[in-house]
Image (cartoon, rainbow, N blue to C red; front, side, top):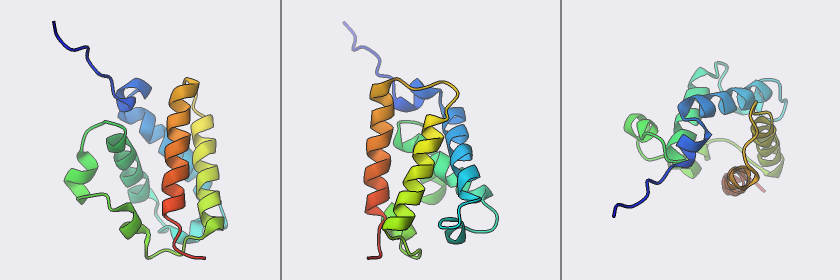
Length: 129
């Protein structure tokens, strides 16, 4: 008797295209946010790509992010930027709004996984009082 096939969150939500759309909705908000916009480069193309690849990999997708950029080291990569509670809250608000704006809503238990991760990860990036 074989083991049942495990489906990843990445596959469940629709693969890379779903993460790219999530990240596009997020960065569309960041582009006009007076708190967050100064933290990002003028051209958000690479930021969009890196974030989508990271999230897809984190949720069980291909390892393209690590193959191209090495270990994620999120805290280290974010240390050059002053991130306080205000920046964390703005980032989280935009990410949760992007999640809520998905054209096909996720089941509550899957959405809760994303919310919990985004809350935890955004808090871990705080590096300013």
